[in-house]
Each structure stands twice: as structure tokens, then as C-alpha cells.
Image (spheres, rainbow, N blue to C red):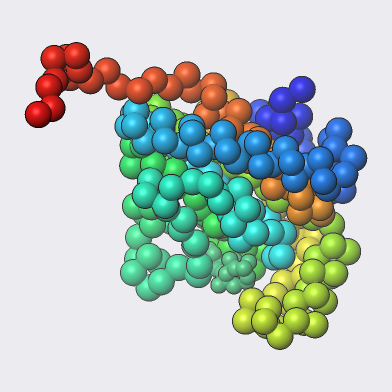
Length: 269
Ligand code: ATP
Ligand code: MG
């Protein structure tokens, strides 16, 4: 069975994260097997990115969301290892700047869209505007509650204009987050990655879970599906995300453009 079919959140279906196992590893029993498979998959990704770039028809957008320490950075590092930096751009969305707040919430998102032939990776995204914003009442409910439909319409527009969209929710358990925070605390080279605010956010775990469930329930569409990735085990998370990206790229049936001249007539002196 394809990874994509296994982990796609079906459209218009109520998603409960309690029913999704963050420890899942599909059919992979060991880290070693998964590592081997990941090598193969990332090698294929290199070829497919080359083709995407050459074809120059579609942009390819990867959205990564998850709780703090769910592994967004690590996923980018491992999955995108083999891709050519020319043709790839990672955008991390932080707290909006004053200028960004002076615009509609999708303004900064639209500006970061990959151009044709490119892969764009979003480390956080417009979904923050119905996650952190909702959990902390940063705008009134009547404002954020309209955003699910606005996001669906926005993504539909992108898809119809040549952007392929994949969205990944990296699903870790609350215990796993604790473990990862403790690891970071114990390792001085990781201290820069943590702030007291991260630990405070943990108190809102249930509210975030609810907010994520609404996103996964309302915004997983045919043209821009969400995937719920078991992410307690990093090696499985990497393999699942990389495989789904490769499966989607394969499905595009890309072709190298025909040369605009007769190659056989060229003579090089
Ligand atoms: P890491 O996960 O590696 O710590 P990070 O993505 O958390 O990296 P930070 O600079 O620590 O990077 O955090 C970015 C912060 O910006 C997050 O707390 C996120 O919730 C917040 N943020 C992102 N988008 C918005 C938004 N639209 N409105 C308010 N806050 C936002
Ligand atoms: Mg952070």
C-alpha cells in the first residue's frame, strides 16, 4: 500500500488524533530497514526534482506543521538531503512582523509560493493563523473561524494554477515531546533551540490538539491533502514524508521538454 493512501486524512471526515498512533511504523520493523529504504527514496527524489525543474510547469509546495519539537527542522534536513538547493526554498513562518500584520493573513504566504519548477517547503504556514492564533485568541473567533473556508479557497486557487500541495502533520505524543525537551535541556548545543515559552505552550496541548483536529477535518481536500504522520520515531517519520513526496511527484507523469531545435543537426567544431 502506498504511504500516501495510508496516511492521508480523507476529505470531509472527522479526524481524532487519539485514533492515530504516533508510534506507528507501518510495515517497518527496524530502523535499519527504514534507513535503507530512505536512501533509495531520497535518491529517486533527486531525479524527480531535476525533472520538475527541467519541465518548469508546476510548483511543488510542502507544508510542515506539528507541535513544538515534533521534528519539522529534522524532517527538512533528512528528507531534502539529496535535492539541489537551486530549485528549493525553505520558508519559516514566525510571529508576523508589523508589515505582515498590516496585510491579510495570506499575503506573506502567497509571496513565498514556489515558482514553476521549484520545490517550496513551509516550516509552519498559514495554518498558524488557525492554530496559535486560535489557541491564544490573537484575533476574535468570528475572524479565525472564517479562515478554514478562506484557506480552502486559497489552496484551490493555487492548485488550479499549477501548484501541487502536500501538507504534513507530524504527530508526536505528549510524552515524546517531554523527552525531546529534556534532551534539549541536557545538551548545551541545543539550548538555542528552546525558550521558556516552549514549555508554557505545552500547557495548551489539549487546545492545540483540538485546533489541529479541526484543521485536519476541514482542510484536507482533494487538491491539497493533509497527511497525519506518526512522528515519535524519527526514522519512520523521515521515510513516510519522503515516500509521500516521491509518490506524488511520480504521479505527475513529468516529461523533459522537447528541444526547440534539431539536436542531430548541431555540429560542434
Ligand atoms: P522550532 O520549532 O525549531 O523551535 P520555531 O518554528 O518554533 O522553531 P520559533 O522562532 O521558535 O521557531 O517560533 C516561531 C513562533 O512563531 C511559533 O511560536 C509560532 O507559533 C509563531 N507564529 C508563527 N506564525 C504565527 C502567526 N501567524 N501568528 C502568531 N504567531 C505565529
Ligand atoms: Mg520554537
